[in-house]
Length: 453
Picture 1 (cartoon, one colour):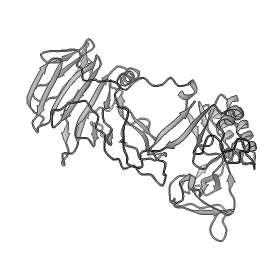
Picture 2: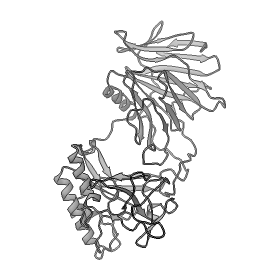
Picture 3: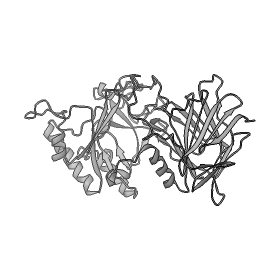
Picture 4: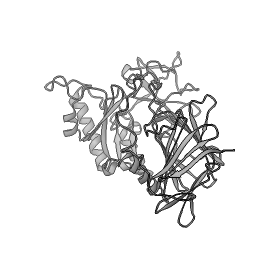
């Protein structure tokens, strides 16, 4: 059972020491935000823990952010110093004009409710140390009615209820991967939590009775944000981390990113690993040519087609059965994608994707038709021809209310503007002729992404 050996409530802060020697303090930093800080030293400087080196799997991608391990965080997680206490101390806890924090002086458990008595947050267990005493964990009660959201870019996950998520960059952009983690989540029961840390974490929402929150951090420094609606909780998050940029309207709608000038589709049996059914009723599997720019040279599952070595577009080494094969077991028929379906391949084109969104009445805000390393945007024999191909797609997309952008890993200015070669890039021409007014640029150096609008 939790127990305190020391307790003090004064100057709008509650300070305590647990039976196993952890020291903590908590206080309101805004009328609806409580900060809780716990460590073994009692030194609360408010600085987020930054690991010296983070092991991030590169998967053969030399440009992956932070892949070198040379970690440096120039921007703090918080926009200002939130060490100033707000509200007032009372006999039983802390008060603001919106909320009351009721603190148990014996156990250290606390509850936060509003003036009507409605409970927004309960912490009925003190933070605990792991066996190695290298990091702390927090366990909070849960109910079957509570749902959880957040954690950053958790690919394939929307509602976190019943799931466990990683707060770390796994550099996997497909289902189950984590690419832009965020140590923040919010609930439908009236609170959200932001951890002030850059360390790896695990948030486990799988048990209906409680949630388990852990970071590889010797301290716990977290903010409990209170609010009746998700909007109020997210606005509380903005108070701590800063307002988001005012993006164009289309960016608030779903986007589609893929490479429509690189990959091939091969007819396979429906039970093949990675098989996808297309409008013609047949099932196909996607492959991409072996190319150092695609960082796919070590990927398993190689096949040969028309003199090219190819690998699966999505990782996976399961069973694949091609519809027709040669003596070596390689497929004898395949279709090369394109932007506009100009080579009798419309169902595999970028235009067809726009059509499908509209047929299903799904919103689509923006489209990157060459998103992927080693992908250009045309299959002609010249830069001018490819640029015209890009322009045709851009026009079609804009007619359907979809903004267009590009990804690049090439120089944006050609070496010779008077004689631009196929495969080179010219941002000015892409914007003027191609109609692409924004660009997403690949990871640079240690992983600083550049977005030009």
